[in-house]
Length: 389
Image 1 (cartoon, rainbow, N blue to C red):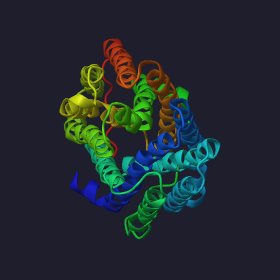
Image 2 (cartoon, one colour; image 1 turned 90 degrees about the horizontal axis):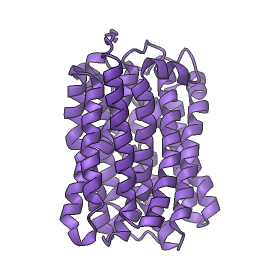
Image 3 (cartoon, one colour; image 1 turned 90 degrees about the vertical axis):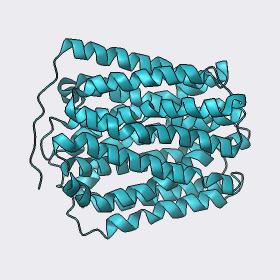
């Protein structure tokens, strides 16, 4: 396990810096949109186009990786994110922002594919849940760091956008200068959703549903916090509470999933999400500390369930297949995060702030029901332990 961590140390450092810039950008974009007087529907459409870009990366990025290698594509994706963020600072128009955020979604999805395929190649199956916990905790701690930069500036000026761009570009250095061996070039590009569905139906459906849940939360958490009566610092605290919950749960859930049927852990995580989402529907900014507590519990499910899906889907993968698996997962997750902001935006427009946690509750319940069905339908598969070098 220690050797696996050492092999990806530069990757983890780059990912932390990247996610700090990502967290800041994702927090200030919807708040700036709100400040410009744009509607929840406008913000939802911006989020949906971001998700379309995210999904398109699944078709294109694997071909770039095979042609030029993981590190060069990683650097190109960082450049696209920086350009997108700076363009948002220069031009404040709904239609333009849709294009800029679509570019950002394309780039971040390609980066995730590189990270996850690299991590999968360096992880043995008996440690994969733990390694993806490290990956997710790195993502979330980086996001927290970025979010807390937002209260130091004014979202209605260009400063925070420029700071986000500076942080994003800094993520290139650790991975570009690494001496560690890079992953094997993919033997096949594209994706095979039929194969993924046959290999792991619960990962197939669960990835789609976790995308809906994450897409709704990521795109509307700042709006939800503002409409609930929280200040910008309070909104940062709320998002941090979700992230802290994810960090607290990530290692135990990941490690337990290495030892038992991962689907059982999925059901447990969704149960936490159902309880937390129901609690959030009853609260507003006047119950600030209860809001943070409920958000922390929701965080124990919102992001950890994604890593459980990825680990489950990759348990049976062979060397050279990891990019292809990651591409399929990215497509499904991308479709989910297209649906998520559209559903979340409509729910807030109809029901106000409680509409967002109500959406989360519904999709957690669907996910838990399907995972339970699959547990009853098929016994756990035997995991193939693939030796790593």
